[in-house]
Amino acid sequence: MNKLNLRTNKKNEIIDITEDIRRLTESSGIKNGICTVFCPHTTGAITINEAYDSSVKTDLMFSLDKISPVYKEFRHAEGNSDAHVKSSLIGLSLNLIINKEKLIIGQWQGIFFVEFDGPRNREVYVKFISE
Ligand code: ZN
Image (cartoon, rainbow, N blue to C red):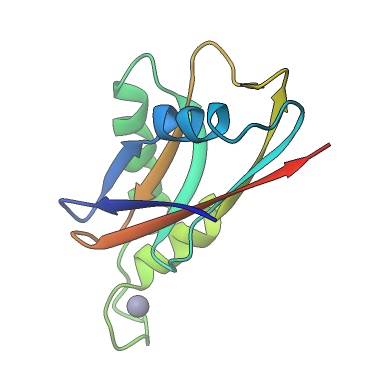
């Protein structure tokens, strides 16, 4: 079992984990198969989006704050329901294709861990399935 340990720094943050996933893939020995990336947290998420222009990350967070603001009607006592909603909107796992020992990912894409309630210690699990 492979696991990344991340330390996030603020409430809303996007951390590029593409090179970590690529490194684990290339050291896994898998020639062809699937790489599953899973976030075991209810106020974090995993997604793929543009990594080339970092303003895309900023705009993504801006839009998610508009989609899921903090409502006074929220009942969850921890006070972070906006973060729980964003986590469910984005999702917690990815299935990526490994072809000829390489991760298939688009030229402009990056794999992101998304923090909605930091700073926190976070984990990302990575599992490989061989074809
Ligand atoms: Zn909560």
